[in-house]
Picture 1: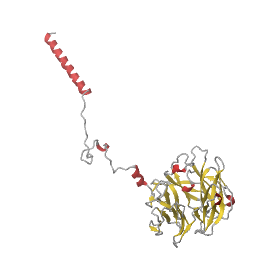
Picture 2: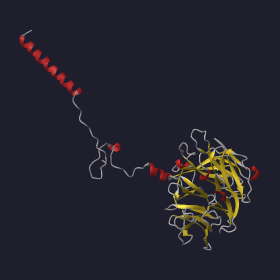
Picture 3: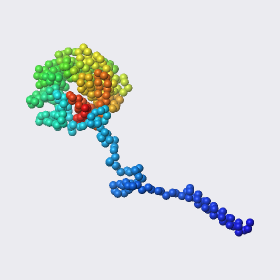
Picture 4: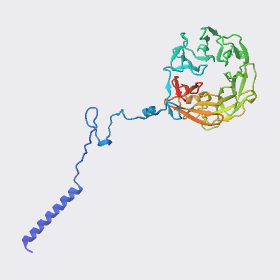
Length: 405
């Protein structure tokens, strides 16, 4: 092979090597340019600068107020009438109220406001002043069934009987306390604590304090003045029998001592049925791991006291419940109860409560409503037609309304 031909082959080999090397560089090492698709309308921030991103999947740190949040979705989806789900709970008062009660016709509400005045909230939503008098710093209010009379207790021990219809006012003795009216509004029951411990009595009188009569000496125990609807019983108290059981003793207005009711636990709280023949009560079992309150129902009339006892399998307190009829009960039931709340109920003063209905004839328990506002039931009231439920919340002391029908 000639010398010139060898030189040409060497040059060709070098050129081919350079070409192959260049192709390898292009394919494997050179960075490809970004290709950006321009959206039809590029979203922009409020300052006019474009927001980074591509098409409909763009992201932004700007708050988008038109997007739904958990809060406004719940508000929008709350039912106007209770069907067991999230339900509108309408606030009826702006301030804390005390001692709300239904009117005798079962449609309107009477209550004491923190401004020191009494009001009448009508079924149509209108509020009227019950009396133009101002009663400052009232500690508690006991209403007569006719809603025309009340007894007001003050922190310093002063007590006033007041008739809103006649404007009559009577000062009652300071050593009287814990008043409750009879169902017919003609009598009151109260505790009289004289200076001598031997002069502590459960007593009854006329609402203005006249014709006072001693009924039972108070020796000890948690005595509750709670006149039964059938007027047979005026008070009761519970006494621990041991580690996990207690008894409730009932007192009649003529001094009768009725059969005691056995309670399968401690921490008794009770409310009367409409006819006064049954009692819904709550207690907790000290031996249970979580020590939560449980609801029970039992007969509570004369010789039948304590008979037909049944556990209702709901964890709440009896005073978070109300009888609509003698066999239908509505209760505020916490979604979750802290452990040991039966032993220390104050642990549950800020629970989110749901509303349950209990049918005592069938035993069926039904969730009626989940209030769309955080409510801890302090008191439940139901209109006579069963269409409206009024709730006073422990959290803010306000009144709320839930439509049931």
